[in-house]
Length: 149
Image 1 (tube, one colour):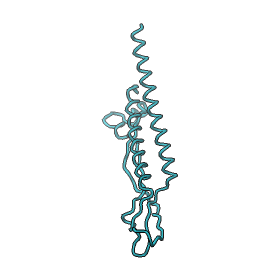
Image 2 (cartoon, one colour):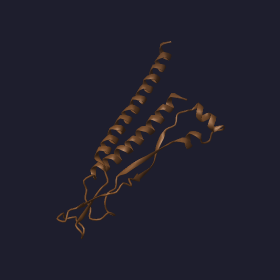
Image 3 (cartoon, one colour):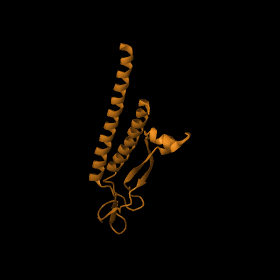
Image 4 (cartoon, one colour):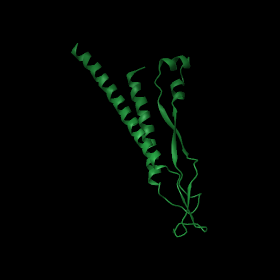
């Protein structure tokens, strides 16, 4: 594995965590929104990550043995799924968004879970920045060794 592959892997992880932060921000922004029907109510969303196994194995003879030797595999966002937890239905007949029966619908966003997701994504992003920075330092030191000798 080349040291340059580390940049690709760390970059894919930073991109995935960036998507995770965007989805979390969307969930938090809509956490207190209200609707008059279940169909129009915002539902929490979550990114689904998958390994870049196809790219790591494509176009190479003896793919599985090479995959073991070149063990760097990045990550990609496979999609965004809606949370299937039930919406919050609240009886509030005086609310301007209430339906004919007096109910309002609130998103199924759990703010505490979203805050935990945000902190996890932030830490993961920072860790990958540190990996890229450490790799850059190693490459720089390697180049300097060639200049001194």
